[in-house]
Image (cartoon, rainbow, N blue to C red):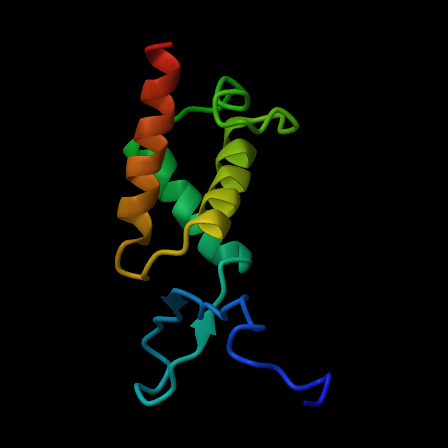
Length: 114
């Protein structure tokens, strides 16, 4: 057996495709350009939606609640929390916002009732 040859057991790291697709009217329907989560526009949209849904204001009160003590404001804390959460738990593109909402609700409630 060749040492450089890989077997199915040797490849434990699966490739997970990006879960969001670019949706713009100017793009032809036969082209589906994928947008990875590291795309700042995608992350900003997710952060904006979460801040709106949870009525999160400016300030720094969520930095430690979310485990992002290195951040100086709520927006950055949510941004890095979103990146960390999605890196740990891959979800389908249809469930991304719902998953983040349930995880954030759980995280905040855990802090309230401790």
